[in-house]
Image (tube, rainbow, N blue to C red):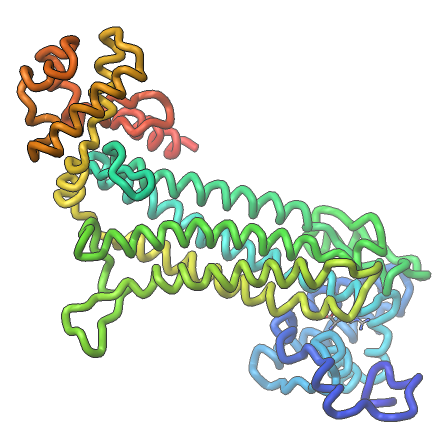
Length: 456
Ligand code: ARG
């Protein structure tokens, strides 16, 4: 037989450079375990259906098991001349068990084979990512529980806005991660259907049992259209889109961790295990991990755009272009696995500097809205209350005073509605704890949320 599995039609050998240029084995070898799992299920089905002899099926399965063991033991050198992981394994099988190995590819094409391999692979990787995301979510909740009462400045435009609980801030990120998890579960369920049986594009002439193979491989069902089965990569795009959103979330948290660990904010300390020093400035402790995650967000976005552009305008069904789907997908998986895992550990070990957060929260007239709300409760329309407090703040800026330091006489210069009880409303605790409705930053609202998460 020819060294190429498709050599029959050709009279001239492939150009050496073209061989390397068209090969994907360099990167698709990571699919080997899934390629073998798919082939074993296919072979067993062929035997059960009487499409190949039971003995042939048994030999093929034993051969594939032996090849799997060899690959895992590092005994296999893949060949560029054999182009991809599918033909490397099939050629090896034929080498090992003889011509009977050539029966494996009955009723199948590399087009439906690669479609099943990527799905099996992605499904496994998603389960790993889900495990890391659960750990990150738990770390955020634990930080919230351990720092329930810590007050920090809440910002808009990165200007001090209103005081919030640090626990509330951590739970904001938990919400984002929880949505990321649900997006990932959704897309996993959508693509967990088995494409084998589509053949090259039109289906197969053999009496295969697709449902049996699907069940064997843990799929929820089978794909419904052979053309779509071999040409669809929207599941990979959906995954990369999920990953882009996840990295966008992590980049925001990264940015805050970087700011918070600067000498100017000094709100947190990241564990030494996640930082590095400077080769010249002895005082430096750099937040490398969040910086890198912030940076890696770019390549994950890039991978999404690469896949969308790759698939744009491709006519049905399979096109060789689609071999280019793997590197962006693999890179995305590697990048988010690393990023989420390191974040879960880093957040768990982060130390919170409660005193510094509190001092910062008291600056910037963060309780000004509370004075306005107070005037509103005394009957003033909100717009006028806003004006009153605006003038009060200007007076504070000019005299170098803070809102809670003003005397009652000073307050009353701005509105006669203000009484002695104003002082009950302008402390940080009062400001925070007044925001009790679901989703607010009051201690009791955050506690209710933590309790709900515990029960969930
Ligand atoms: N290595 C190919 C890929 O990843 C496998 C499918 C090849 N099919 C084909 N008709 N050339 O896309």
